[in-house]
Length: 482
Ligand code: GDG
Picture 1 (cartoon, helix red, strand yellow):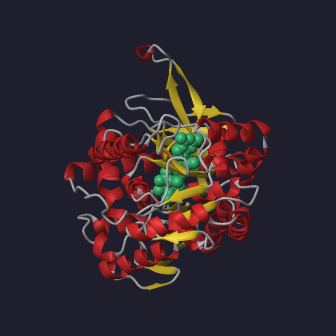
Picture 2: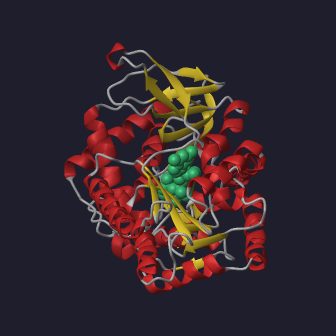
């Protein structure tokens, strides 16, 4: 059998299908979606004859396997029903809120679970068809938690890795999930299960002990095998990162620096620019940040001439009810604060419900004196790392929630509990008033950390762990399809 030696399986392909103006014509073009995962895996995809299995992002469109920019892409079709039940329903209205500590209430619907199983089987089938004998398959994220087991059943010769981009919750919350055992068993089909934080891997191992009674000894989990024996899976932290070089490169470009100055001028040259960049998601703590900022204005501790908050809230999951409600709440808050405090020349909050190109984001990072990352729960939070990488001048202050995975590594940021509004206000004031010397004393070690631990290192360390698992696999497993 010929096939790919390395297969990535993710909900989304690394390209978007952009239909022509005349939507009904069925014509259109592919455009690379510039995510961190593509950057990390692209070189590997090319050098290993790799394939990428994923959904092209538009419902009810069937595409054949195709080559794009040297990558072998394998589209998995989803119907409008699949998108509603598997993606918006189970993935984003059950798993997402449950795994983010029930910040929003998870909804448990049996039809969503059925669709999740159906679509996971389709992804597993597609991966099984393209993987070469003994290949390595890397499955990504919470939309595909059943794929490792389904794939192992079809193809015991494969070495399977799974990386979980979001938090894994404490047992007391996880145990709410009506299908809690099936999901654990799905994940345990992988040889290596990667998490963002040590705490996530710990929560996972605890759930395994409580629900499945398997023996765990970090990072190992003893899993019963199909033939009555056992095998060992590895579950541990591999904190994800960014392509730091590309942010440094952009930050050095004259047009990006000029744009940063232009942004400041267009805001009326406030003394300090505060910045938030998030998908519009209830996990990101955007309301908490605005509440703290609004109170500082109300109390007269800052004025709009002193400080403007720029909030980029890129549109996300707009058909899920909790996201519609969040958008309404945030826009009401922005309207009230701006109505109370704006002047003809200055605004309190410049709110942008739009997505921007990467160089505009870096210009914003360069313009921002203070970066506010106040997530209530976040697997990692790449924005924090992108801000730090972009600050080639070693200036600027990162305010970072202790509930974001990035807090484990970015220890010289100003850490904050975003639920504690009074302390958040004090921390924002500390950031606004921080002298340049202290800014660079804090920023230098942050930059070192992000530059030394970039996304290439992350993928290398995960794949090294997979290679080690592969070398320990019994020859029987590898010969199964011979
Ligand atoms: C999940 C986990 C984990 C945002 N708006 C624009 C834009 N972005 C980019 C950011 C950043 C990415 O999107 C967002 O990544 P985050 O890590 O901040 O958050 P999630 O989207 O929730 O990602 C998270 C991550 O997976 C990776 O494992 O860290 O915890 O939740 O790169 O810059 N980029 C551009 N324009 C925008 O308007 N170009």
